[in-house]
Image (cartoon, rainbow, N blue to C red; front, side, top):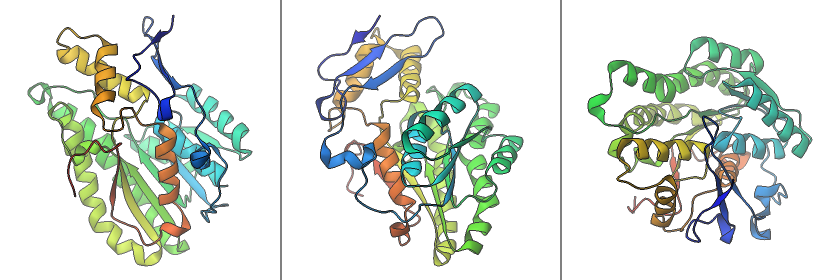
Length: 309
């Protein structure tokens, strides 16, 4: 059964947004139902700008779905040899096959957990010398900080700070030697506009950004840049889990559909972001043309952040 959300909850450029309700423990899937207009067809593969990275190699964590998959797809469209890493081999294999079919570029995959040393070892065994590294890990579910144990904090730090830092440590010197490197950390708008219910994410991801600010200024003279993407509300299954967590924590009698719709309407754009929009921005940050841009935390949130700076 498919339930259509209200007219206020639409995809990009008026495309209707559909929700397939959860059945037992199965996933909730969200999709957009319209092609992008010609002005944004680069996102759909018709690039009018050579990003200068064809032939480079990329390792993309969280590359089997959502924003990570969108980044992997866009890099492959630019001629990059991509290896995607995540924990689920079934979704990885499917994503790699789909991206390869769409782009004509062979995409490798490896079942690897960014939070574990053996997972990072496995990822680098599959892609030993990446020119491009995309760090991307799921955030924790929302909650009350009074309920979080030390183990909860350590798990958050491993996923969103220590794991990514270790990956940077392992690849950055090779990038410096080759005189090319692009590292992009996909974090969250919450580091700039914190929400109390995602304090685990606020703290861990802010630590990663602070670390990057120092290192990136040492590597840029070697044509190695490190930047952070700060997405707001995007139509991904991670967003579904976040809203489901809010519902479980303090739903106030509202349904999932009501919370989903309210979150879309609260954004100045009146909608959720599309993962491909992150993919396109990520590809630019990885481009040859972006060599003078480093240590930046770039918001992509439809204007949701209310500040000037």
